[in-house]
Image (tube, rainbow, N blue to C red):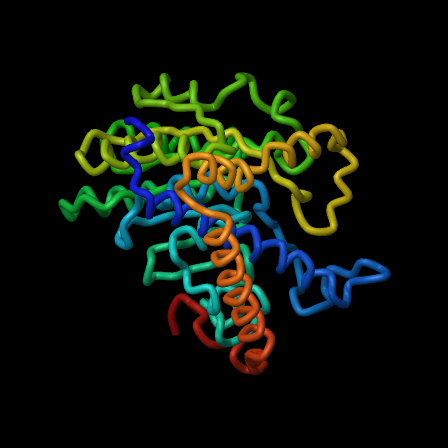
Length: 334
């Protein structure tokens, strides 16, 4: 596929989404530390608990999700805000959930690692490797119902060493399920470098063992991700089975907020920021006269206004009442 085939509105939509994700995440990153200093206390502030941000990895989510329909499903990881936003999750409800408010997606009970929006078929989990079998379940549903919606299973390169990954690949390949496995290789499984945890250099090569396509793509190039994801989605909708896409990407922040990253060489972080996927796309679009400086300024202003409104909504929303802790709980019977 030639890049000229991509419509102008798709280019602009990708840029808008990536900037929206970055602005949202960086804003959350600032708010997270409120009340947690001078002595870091993870339980304090408007966003208690852990927070995993995806700054630097926006192209992976946007390049994949722009190919999807509302009835397609995405199952994310503990670092999932970028995929949630790219899939169209309600941002006010999602932010309220992160703030632990009753106006949240799960009434403030799930937090940022457990986001569920059935309106756009998005979900995520804090359990490493859990997305793979869950997405396969969606693929089985599509097959049994005779429908052509597809399922996206997202995982990191560390999760690709879990048994769930290989079991899911095997079953999806065996039954030709419409599942696309997306591995975000950001080089670090928490603090463990990929070369010390994985026996091969590219997880995409593992697709050969299951007789399915495996593609490795530069995660700083959103158009490249878009192209390989589009082919995988076409294949899945046509009943030709699953695909494995490995996206080489970088995270700009620690594994979690508060992570001092003592394990990470300074040059690794510097290299990541020198290959910022948003700046790369911006320069590409300006160079091809697809977007102007004035349009970029307008997009940024609109998104910054939207994010401010979203944060204000979450801050002003009420917390759940104590007795609500017993609601919406599965008890297993009388």
